[in-house]
Amino acid sequence: MDPILSEVYSTVLPAAPFVIGAYVGIWLALFAYVFVLSRRAKRTSEDVRALERALEDRERRARDE
Picture 1 (cartoon, rainbow, N blue to C red):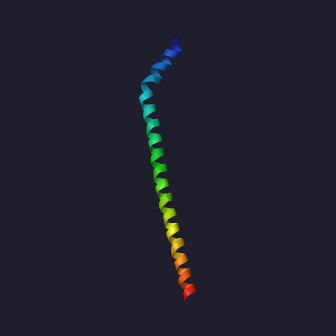
Picture 2 (picture 1 turned 180 degrees about the horizontal axis):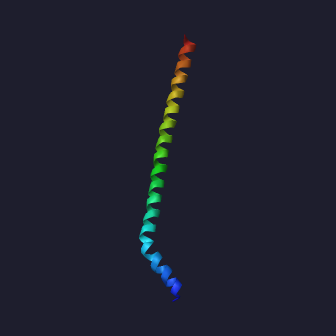
């Protein structure tokens, strides 16, 4: 084997678990962030629907008076 390649492999291969761990950590953080954002978006949509219903009720009561 080429001495340069053997030096590169001896440097890179011991670091492989750290690289894999970093990728796993980044993907887990990304999935957690997307999950949190989707829950917040769902709550915001529910809040907007509730406000729309409250506004419709208020307008209906104002017309009836």
